[in-house]
Length: 231
Image 1 (tube, rainbow, N blue to C red):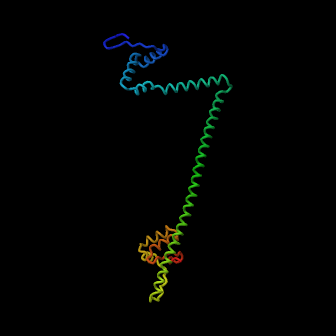
Image 2 (image 1 turned 90 degrees about the horizontal axis):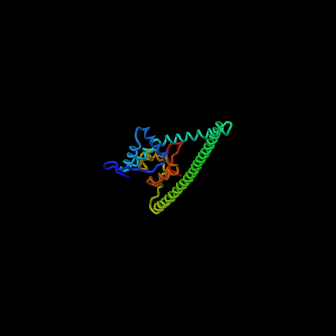
Image 3 (image 1 turned 180 degrees about the horizontal axis):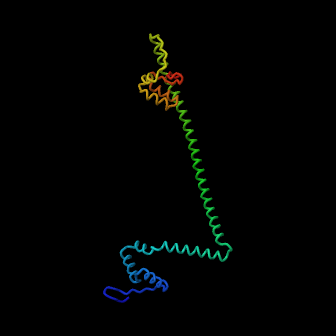
């Protein structure tokens, strides 16, 4: 290196002659010089602007890639034309066969995924059925327990009445309207109607037993439209 001016140095480096000529031609086509372009690159690098530097170097990257791909494709077609009678048709057929294969693989994968989803739905339905069966068994068990407790209570009441001077018989419970049952259970008519619609009959009987002051279960008679004591 040698001094070429105040605070300036002459820089020299080895470069492939063909690349250097191409570089100069490229700079000239863009209205600049090799020296100005190199100085711009140096300023960008020293200014921590490597990203900008990469951007400048890659502005025409996509265009160059497209050009190379196009050239390769043309070269392939020309080579095929020299060695085969109908290269274009055969090339198209080969491409179509490749696309058919890819489409077939994608279709098989989609069918496999669909089968998996169907199997999962079937397993879910089986689990729901088992849970429903278990809930029914649980409801029946609750009703039996409630019946047992009520029977124990009735036996205690009988023992009390037999040992006392009370000799009368308890009157038989008459069917009640929805309003009458709601009053007996201490809830609104809307609540009684909602529970009767939403709960299975055994669970509705158990619900009434928990609300009834005497521990009686009530069931709805579709024929009469009244609520009567559960048998």
